[in-house]
Image 1 (cartoon, rainbow, N blue to C red):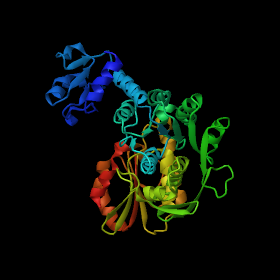
Image 2 (cartoon, rainbow, N blue to C red):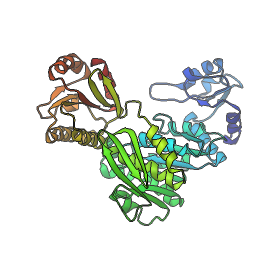
Image 3 (tube, one colour):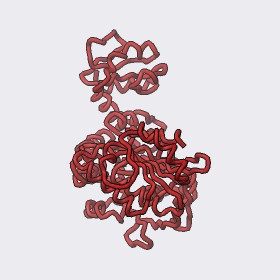
Image 4 (cartoon, rainbow, N blue to C red):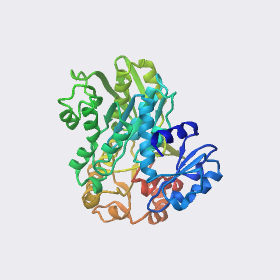
Length: 429
């Protein structure tokens, strides 16, 4: 079936679904195949649950007019998303980076929604499946799209750009994330910059942080840029943004407007500044920008403040890499609270650099004088230091209640890679 014909079916449907547990009447089901699942096996179930059609790529599961047989379901999903994006023709801002993508995306969505009917990436749907699903969630009423792009190997951002065809772009930063796939920090920079390459080749606009030397160097010859700086009176900045407070919540000033936020950590300054920068570019009223950012509250284990009795917890357990953990520890060390402790889980996908990077974090704990530290996971267990170490969460779970009662710490930072699921720690307080 041609993509144009499939698009007509899509437009008459209630939207695309890839999980039969989420099927609603008149959905268009795509049978995707992974290492541990075969969506073709659920085509019949999808139709029985109310799907209008099931797109499959295995003839053994063809059951008549309600199934659409294609060569590759995933590739067809991606082609349909690109076709739909071109059909709508709306402006799209893409963002990527090592840290802060999702928080920045949520802030951008909040600000842009003050002027446009905006659709943004839901949760963390930022890969070769998530980006197409995000594009297909947009319709004729959508006025602006915000698409988050994640990557763990080279050429992935380039591929996602070819699907989303962004008009605007922003890279949060370049850090030590997914080193196993990228090979080195230089590999990270090269891969994330694929967004810049796409935008420059198509003469599109780039938002950037003037104080990031890597971004400045890469954009020296590109004229369609709009930049921000956190240094007072930076003459090259298109908008002046000043930091005013970081104890514990971040506040900023831009022009004559002060914004008090629900975000913790100096690492969030650039995330906020990017949202202000984009809002300013699209001439969104300053008070609307202030309301949007002030009302944003982080969720999903990202820099959340959780209170358990008299204990206050900074829960930042959605993800972790060397750059983000170092930033979190720097901020935590600056907080004035006396009785502080950290719970850190292994940073994953670091490949050959795992041992070195975990030891660097342990050394940083000592440099900051953070004495009460609980380190969980095989990588941290192998490090040298006086901190309490546990091979796995079960060992930590057994020991932690006793040490908690003994030390009486009242401020905790919890951070680790997603697979460590350190939000489980909350049950132990």
